[in-house]
Image (spheres, rainbow, N blue to C red):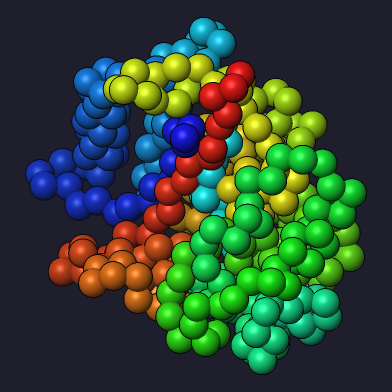
Length: 324
């Protein structure tokens, strides 16, 4: 069962009427907000928070409904973001690339000498770039994610548990979405930075962007309220659970203002990455389907190519326990 999580969407819009830019953006924000709240009501969404960010970095942020404990969702309510963590992780990796501590085209074993799959010839050829663009050949369903028991060395234990996994393709040859790739990316960050992943994430990304409500540890996650799952068309409250390796692939979180801060940084002149690094993360490198490619942590949708733009996005959902 999956718990709905905060979702980031970045898009460029063209006004249809020749209104002044500020008026057009305000009208668009109002229309999108009205549409979202209508859909929340029609589909029985119990609680949500959303932000509409324009290309100037101005945002309309609001909250809706209640959490699983019955308390109102507000702008300070923390959510787990699910796979929206992946572009954040890719951003952290790129800060180390810019510092010369990670080379995207180096094999993962250059940073994690003990990294190995059942086919070591293939695993020895997996690069950091392969991790970020999901071209390692590692399949989903390895058991490497959603591990809720405590580990003294969570990333190290996770990497060790890949030793019996058979890759389904040669490195660099095919897109195969697997959150395990971003568990390994978290381990690479730890090795290159010389500190726990969540500590580096704070230093390099979260703190510089003012993401003060970010959820990056099990202790932080204690403040995340109960959420909801759906059964037979009805939402019911469920316990929020946490994976220690989750910040790098799906258990990063925070309130809607934190997520907005990341979106604003990505839309404008980034405070933490060069324009060249931002562009590289958003360049489609491998085909997902006829209309979507995958960059470094981002999906790149070409269906708006006739308007001279692409839509760069990622969605996410975090699992929950119905045993609450």
